Length: 322
Ligand code: HPA
Ligand code: ZN
Image 1 (tube, rainbow, N blue to C red):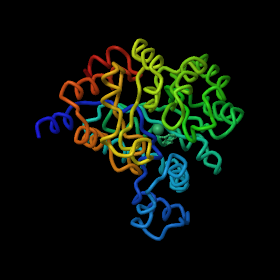
Image 2: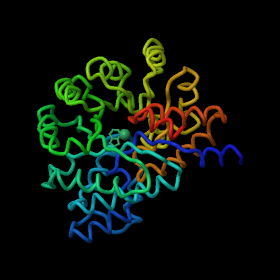
Image 3: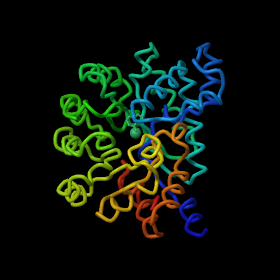
Image 4: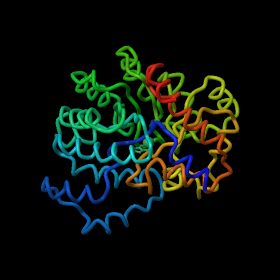
């Protein structure tokens, strides 16, 4: 229908996409063959069948296994270029791309191959794109600090840092010192919080890590005072509808709290998170949300406007997109 067409065609920014989560099963098999990596799956179809998740951890186990085929600079380039082309087809004009260096450096892949390959694709690709380096929160803060040191030679290729992986039991405050150092270095700051973890993690991400956006954040509505604060301070939430259903944050799309988040006056954006694993890219996320939920043209326009408004772009670039 008309709204569906408008939603598909409107220009958007994507602010929550893990590049390793854009690795499609076909590319996983192609890279495994190219690099001589053996996989515990017989076929693309068998790998896809494993994409039935009970929670965040059951997804992360398969996501890290998939990323093990990435060995060379060109692997990171090919993966990123495939995402940028796919995003371009969804009328994404600008993407802020997460990457997880520790998933690769732990296997002996040089930081230069990881950052270099992703960044080179961003320069060559069809849309504007920048990089946000995420620390794995199930690892120690010392390991995050060592990763930051390893990344400093590539400082000019990275606009910000984030925090991802297993949320429960790994609160933001575990990473206070490394985030303080990143702020001094002039990085933009974001963190996953309030996906599976409690609203208190959203508060500590804001107060102790001083992040500028919250990734997910959907559990904020359990705390009315926090919800009011997020609205008042215009903190963006990078919400990922298909991810939330696949990881059983909500039982189905009709139960998603996106309409309630919007009604609370929050600066919500829609994003794909790990599109190869969760059943779709950005327009698939818009389409699934708009099909199942009472959302209007005004909501679509607000979501697109918020995506550019919350992007780490200069005022002139934002105006050019809006
Ligand atoms: N949450 C936490 N860590 C992640 C995610 C997510 O949704 N995707 C990739 N790493
Ligand atoms: Zn995420």
